Length: 131
Image (cartoon, rainbow, N blue to C red):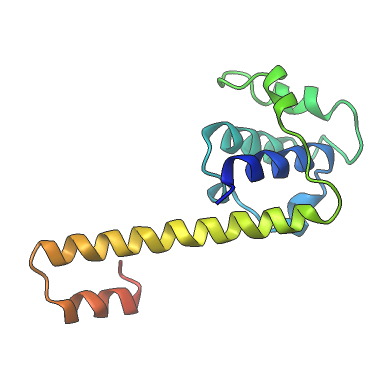
């Protein structure tokens, strides 16, 4: 899992090319790092104002970060994914999210078993999506 670096590359690309927001199909839940989640939210809010290739995107997104612990100068750490690698990076973030969701289900199922629930009931809950 290359999550922190991958997240930074995707965020960097979204700052440079906000039109990628729609084509990548990512949401805030795909990001783990607090900084990248915060910047993603700011990009989402600013998407009607920023545009591809606009040198002022950093400043505009920075304005949407006021009141957060991320500053405009922090945005320089987000180097963009180059070319088609952004799609590989987005796929990696999606796979990481699925792995985190699966881990959560498995941890809940393990907890249920430790609390004395029968394996059959536990399996049924997992199968029905109630865990």
